Length: 327
Ligand code: ADP
Ligand code: MG
Image 1 (spheres, protein in one colour):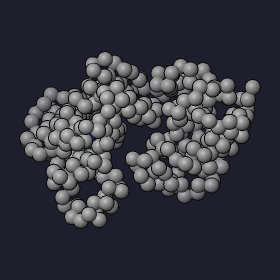
Image 2 (spheres, rainbow, N blue to C red):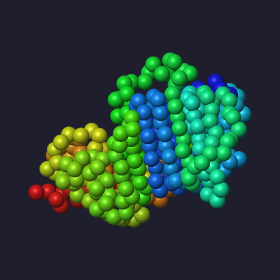
Image 3 (cartoon, rainbow, N blue to C red):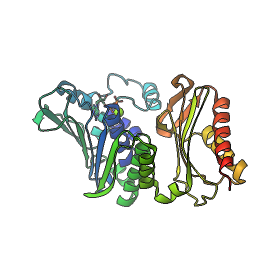
């Protein structure tokens, strides 16, 4: 089981930022409205995610860590199949197998909290009582300490932290109804309060992308035939080339999709006569039956049932918005 978890970890846990993503997504799944992230040494020493979500019932606490893949994977073929599904339900055991992991949690309605921890996913002590407010704290220490080959692949503290920050930004831009904070080596990096109103959302954008982004962007909010496109695009004068200022979410999940990217670029190209490095934070919402966002979660690919229609909608909407604000 240990080996298989470590193999699985090779897929799920590429670097500290991928651990962070799994943990924060779990917090969001648990309905948290506040998520606090503390990192030490670029995540190599510590990745801690604290949330105020529904928590984990004491009986499920050990299960969350030890639900391993042995019973599921018996052949190589199966392993491949599982890996292509992105190891749903295997994130925590995978992370546990390559780190020192602890989960402290107090579930809704429980009088006290419980903690369970593991060393390389090998042994689990029974859950012990632990003071904890409602919600969950997952601590991942010494990532890859028992897989030296993988530890060697980690980059500098600065690089790994950069990936973590990027990852959390993406998540924070997907959920304005959740507050986020991030610290590195005990120093605050950002704190983002809940943002219901567009103005508050723009404050979050400015905090994450720099105030320059906002000065030059326009807010849009269009709906047509079951498709909605909202968010912010750069005004034509915006010229700073920023590869990291392109955020596109489909039904709340960040994607990097060829069709989407093409539609956006084409609109910029046709209005501005150049489509290089457009800056945008956009949210496309549509009937979940019209899109499969699980094609390859790690690669952020999506598959639209009617790609042509989606492409046309994005293109037309942006073309109009950009043309309207052409100086
Ligand atoms: P998955 O998220 O695919 O179910 P994970 O390995 O990431 O698999 O998590 C295992 C389970 O542990 C989750 O299904 C959930 O029940 C529980 N869990 C993990 N993190 C949290 C959290 N922050 N709050 C509440 N429950 C959690
Ligand atoms: Mg998960």
